[in-house]
Image 1 (cartoon, rainbow, N blue to C red):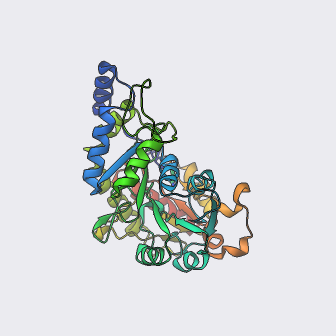
Image 2 (image 1 turned 60 degrees about the horizontal axis):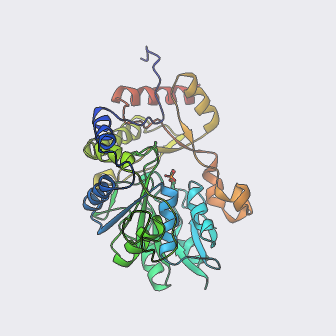
Image 3 (image 1 turned 120 degrees about the vertical axis):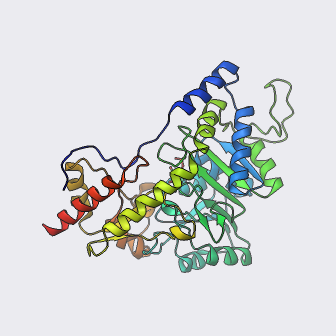
Length: 368
Ligand SMILES: Cc1ncc(COP(=O)(O)O)c(C=O)c1O
């Protein structure tokens, strides 16, 4: 029985004494810019992910954008992107000057549908950006060989898939580059922040130049040698300090998220109106948030909110957004899930009792 009325958040960033301590150290050092702390953050992330290089940038969006630019994507090219993703994936492609080509998704996983990817490749296709939605692996066993055969560069959008593994490797390490986000609703946050990982030395050099005015190495801002044109997408030591402080808690966070997923999966088993989308947690896949397909979604969300349980409805399919408008008929699968998909409360702070309270309320809603 539910007796208390405490807020059950959809997500809540967690920071504490370690973050404060690390940030204070950076303040005391008086080197707030992208420096040794960011280099250390990159080194640790590369080591943990099993990638040769990691380049920290200002956000997941800039990570994808720079990875595409570094891979040579430019005006006149096409970049294949799934219709169901955060708009950043398509925006990053558009901002290179290329044309994003939206493709339909698999309604069982919400990830890019392999057939749709195959059907969208043209002579102008330069890259594909598979997105690991909610931390669930995109169908890489189909995408990677086809992309290789057709000369298409794979840049993974692993913004929601930090330390989620697939076939024995971390997502984000399969393509030419993998991109992560450290925005506040991710497993690790730096406030805003992002990372590109790659095993390709020349791509890493290009990424470093692109993120810092074309400088191959950190300079003085005065008598520097600029090898090329670049942006300023540096991640500061202050932000990296927050990221490093959270790294130690990664395993416990991933375990917690898996437990929350199992709680919903088991707690909602047999409720015909809601389908908890599966994660291969026993094989290392790690949910970022728990996603479901729910009948009467919007009213369910409102009902849960009345009980202080916060959900997040899914993104609208990109083809319905003004910059990317296309006919609904081209995206039957995305349309079939668009008004049913939502993320259940998945905050790291959720107790097992919180998860079962949400399940109880959902059962109660559908029994009315
Ligand atoms: C799938 C996906 N791609 C890209 C991004 C962009 O990341 P950021 O917000 O750090 O720019 C996000 C998250 O916010 C995301 O969920």
